[in-house]
Length: 195
Image 1 (cartoon, rainbow, N blue to C red):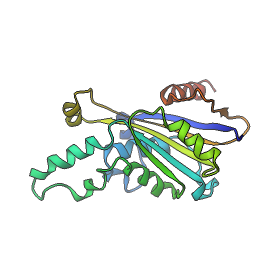
Image 2 (image 1 turned 135 degrees about the vertical axis):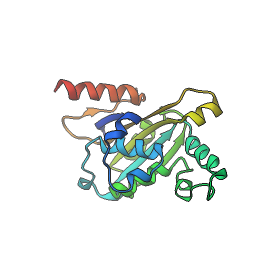
Image 3 (image 1 turned 60 degrees about the vertical axis):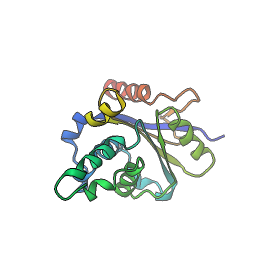
């Protein structure tokens, strides 16, 4: 059985986006895609070291694309109607496309709506079955004020990213108990600050 290792982990919030500089397309993306892309960017992974078709992307979005959908729907009464630019982001998987475009990744991808518990096991499965050599796992929790009113939960805007790859010395091995991306991101942040 191939061992799988965590090469990097990071989390970002909407506040972090104020300092983000991630290419010319970044400003036109919806909030969820900006968070996801910046979380991946902040991992510091050199994706050019991997064949483009060997890196998978697995993303889970807490509320799918609801925040963007609500913004698009509310634009129907504005001059010119709903934004055609925003329409492209009314799918939960839109952030996967932005990550793939930015890093020229053509490997398999999966999109889930809900919590992050499924991401790491699914990514590990892709690697163990030989469908990918590495995987970017991204969890987005994007609930704007408008969406929060619709589903009666608190607004939030953050993303977590973890990069998994086949065995490599010096990296932390992924275990079957590693399912909480938030804890892993905190653990990796603590390791970075202590080194």
